[in-house]
Length: 162
Image (cartoon, rainbow, N blue to C red; front, side, top):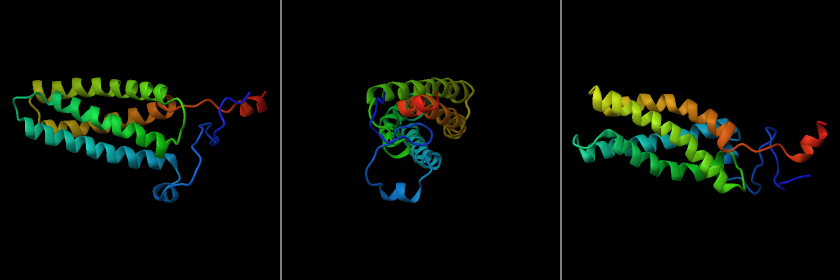
């Protein structure tokens, strides 16, 4: 029995229907869109982190800036990933919980590393954060693709394989 009336991509993920925006007409590969959106979000989040570190000064731990930048960018990028990259519909709350869970693991790793490297060892917070971000991007890509926005294949596809 088909449980979802959405079109299904070759990877089994249901996609939203309707006219594509300019970006989606130019870039059709979801992996490329993921990199573009993730890159823009990383630049945004890292820029916000840097502004916060500079604004708060050395008296405030760098982890505070990470937490604020992370929260703001999480909310923004969730909706962009859903709409532009994975083009999924339905299950908003489930997707949000999974998305936040994946990003929470990333955040904990980020907080631990920035605290150790910048606050304890005294390394410069901004370059350290850029390095940490590079490591976390790889984890996030895999986790969001295979967990946060995963959809079961359509029931019709399941029946054809029996």
